[in-house]
Length: 509
Image 1 (cartoon, helix red, strand yellow):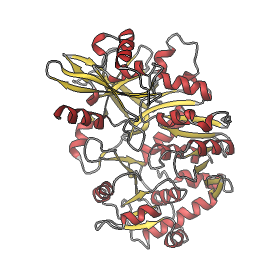
Image 2 (spheres, one colour; image 1 turned 90 degrees about the horizontal axis):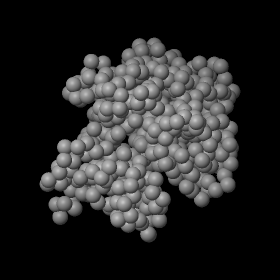
Image 3 (spheres, helix red, strand yellow; image 1 turned 45 degrees about the vertical axis):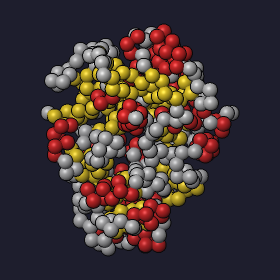
Image 4 (cartoon, one colour; image 1 turned 90 degrees about the vertical axis):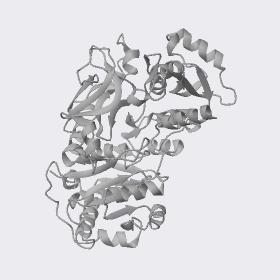
């Protein structure tokens, strides 16, 4: 079982179909895509002297050549190490060293940056003549890899410490691909996925099912997310799909370019990677129509724990529609999901506990980190660190990461509950709630608020009155801090660690 066989099969079935595009221009057909990957795979094993199982890093901004490099790595029986292109140079250095990468493919500006690292492996600029020559080498046959051979080493964001490398096998990646077809949508030749989000993360993983059915991998000319450019690509490509962080949806429908834009070519927007609040998905459904599916997953179980299906999002007649829109849906077809207490015992319906999952999609463990693996995978179950609860119909609602839980006076307060309420206030655009030390109560809730009009934010008294109308008094924030924007990582997740650090600094002062 080699995940690269997805390309081999599609190139045989649809050789002349467009496979890779840059903006509106086709870069390669499937026949050309496979030929370039096969030649590059040969160069990796012969010219570069790599051995099956060796790691090859991909430190690249979104680029069509990413796909050729990725499938060459897999075809040769090597291990891909995709790295967030927006990390700091010291983080690149750590990942390259920790993974023992023997070669690194990079986009031009990053190749120059990486060249300054004394410990860096060979760096290959994917726009260079050397890279073009490597693609012209004698084609390498598809390596005969075992299902549990390592294929993808995904490093976590590392917001709470050094990044950990989640070890994903060919079996893991195939399970994630098949689950997409079971729980998200099907595809036909000519469908397109537009990679406005990083290819080295969720967007790239969701490119696999599109590729498996003869679709087009489209890289925007900008290499990233620009609302106006995205809307132009939507008009060009029929049946186009996206993987978006919720903040990207918010930016798209709130942009000036969206007014009057034709979005009828959108087939599906899969969203995840952070909380999508009920108020926000309602706005998105009103703006674009029901072309959405929510997923909940993490790098350790790539994008595959639960899903709130397109059908459920369109089920407007359900009496508990509001609750379902605020949930992350039901367990995916290929996994088992539980909510458990501290002893690992399943919690009753409605009781909050830690979310655990098992199935073929769950990682094999953390690279060179047995202690973290032992803490995270217990008796075959992946302990996600996320808190949530099931309802009687099997819909899972996330509360928070276990570390984000606020305990005030011995009572649990889940920040997401407060955030959901505040986002229904007409003057609130974004909000994030964290705990602050209190000498008597242990902790108290503090809300960081971005107003719809930052120059004239709502008053703390107005927000406090609003909260008292919609939630128990003990849950309401004890302070409101107004920002022009919330700190976020490169995937659009709010960095609550940064907000806590600000509170600690303020208290120390």
